[in-house]
Image (cartoon, rainbow, N blue to C red; front, top):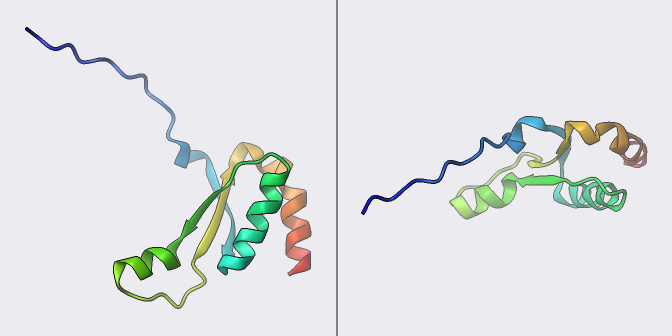
Length: 87
């Protein structure tokens, strides 16, 4: 009996369309993430601090980054700018 391998459709890599909108402390990143998600824009948070801690070494950088899809930038930009004026 031969097994047939299912062909998978090529999916666009979601990382390719991401843009970084913030890099800083975890608290500020979380605040911005909540504001952006409140207007219906999805976010991705990359927490290098937690990754470094779990890996056994520390990180002194402000290492939490927030990303959004490039196509959502025009919708999220007013929220981003208002947030930047507040901090």
